[in-house]
Amino acid sequence: MIVITGATGHLGSRIVAEVLRRVPAAAVGVSVTDVAKATALQARGVRVRRGDFTDPATLADAFEGADQVLIVSAAIRGAAATGANIAAIDAATAAGAQRILYTSHQGASTDSLFPPMITHARTEEHLAATGVPHVALRNGFYSSTLRYHLDEAQATGRLTLPADGPVSWTGHDDLAAAAAVLLTDDSAAAGPTAPLTAPSTLDFAAVAAVASEVTGREVTRVVVDDEEWVRAAVSRGMPRAAAEFNLGMFRAARRGEFMVTDPTLETLIGRPAESVRTALRRMLAAHP
Image (cartoon, rainbow, N blue to C red; front, side, top):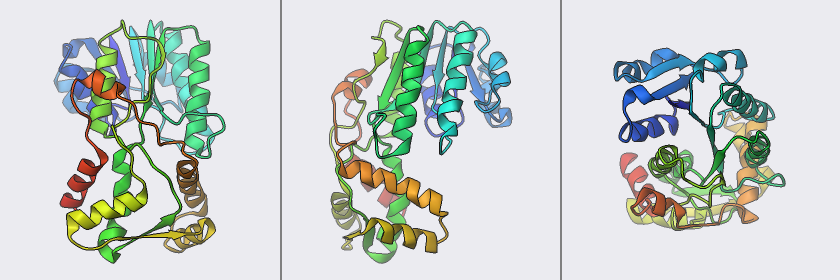
């Protein structure tokens, strides 16, 4: 049985859908924090069980009988994220899983300027130390993240952010398809994958240019000092800790941590990956 965690989330739900195109529902189990949100999957014949990374005792039941477990990284901010991911890995190991997959990131590094990349690197280290055959999916930065900045661009004609750098923004659908391929092909090489990214990068100056093209209204990229941006975010209601956390993404991007692209994603899914320009056009069209 293939067990997938986070199966009602943005990435996990897509992975489940892709896997169900390839294997019978009876061969799939999901681990979710709220089973009520997975009733449609249960109706299709998928095994649905509660599993919470922050309550490891629930994971033994969620992972029971699993040949493979796909661990979608915990959606937790801060130091607790590493512990939650490790708890899931340990539970999968204890359940006897013969293969463990983990959704990591192409920027995973213990010296990253963006804390989630450190979490991914430490989780990968723990996964490798288990001795269980495993795959760390080095996913590109989600292109959907750009949505958080489009409202300002469309409302004010300005994209006011700290200095940044090129990012290989990548779509959830493409990453989900790649995960499903790897889950259903146990001959795939073990360890971290090559970066699973879209074929191109954009910085926020380029994002502003695409927004201008799509909307027909000029969007100006405005670079502000880091602390000025944090103060402005806090004044708009964002907790300071969250603003400083988000600032890490810009600091890492301008150091070049997210600028790598690689053809592996397109090779796995057998089609061109959605470019960030296409993703932006779709998002902007949906938010006129």
